[in-house]
Length: 509
Image (cartoon, rainbow, N blue to C red; front, side, top):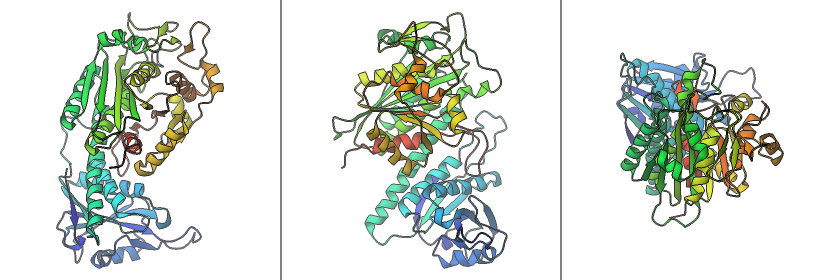
């Protein structure tokens, strides 16, 4: 998609589809009152073109509701698309991101190649974040997962124009231009992650993931090292190797380094991703129903690679190291078994209770290695537990942390990213569930109870006192139903949150 930021009146923009946004200004106290609709623009020509529809009951301006007007009077656009944002007093930039995506998803099946989005004018929607959100939402909406269909139809939007009012000062204009560029980087980086997660396991093996990480790193200027079996043995990564050993596909240990000039010696941020490119469960094999989705078990690793791409392009002044542990978890005569005792890189011994608890095994060595490489703060992401999905569904992801300062940075990051996370406990009492009689710890809690937390407690064993955040994204890395603003399939969550967390530590210019 070719994008462009224009400072002009929207009425004169020639485009196949011009999207403008509306809200309902009625209050919650007016329960039975007719909606009070308003366009979020001060441009008279747009208001006039939509006036008759806004005055009717045909359009309510509910979130992502659409209404199309052909040959709108007084506009150069061929079509005017009204998109609802919901109640005016509750609207956020994140609602606007979705609504911008709705405009593109509306255009795609109608083979509308040129779309223009009018930036909303509202006290609740600052123009800078609004421009960035519009570009992000549009780029994310243009993604479809039908990569290998022989009858795939090109429904892409070719040209996107983001229309904003010309600011009063050059500094305000510069802010909008920067927001626009950031929106492109973030949207394209999240789609990079989605393209990885979408790949089938026979295509995206650990080796292939390493190749794609290296190619991306070369493109954006990151240092990249990709290792395999020999390096795991050299580093004594027993937990990572245990998961890998059941597959004919060799593992990949991927290390990306971003070290900008002028960055302080500390902090060094460590981003660690679970990269299980296909998960059968191993000897503790999963039910066959739904197993095809286990290609997305590398969603955490994919998010780290997408985040590193964005970090390299946005250039925050903070050092970042990313460690991705990629393997297949397969059942075979060489696979690790329930009852095995494994020695992790840190020296801790692990009693294997369930080989389907493999993600925490590879992360154990990844987290320890990131610290050895110099990381002083850690964040990991993993499609780790079904228990987290049971607890939070597919709306919020789980977040755990052993450090309030690191967690405060993450909460601040969510204000910009719009991702939804809910903090879950990692209190010491839960550690009792992973105590082993034969080894230091077990790789599961031994029961159904508090499964997401016992997984986090396992990981906590390998971070020591280093400030650490664990993101369990099992419920949000894959979208089960298509949304008006987003295709069914891989989401790329939490790329935006990871990037904003990193940027929150950057030194000032």
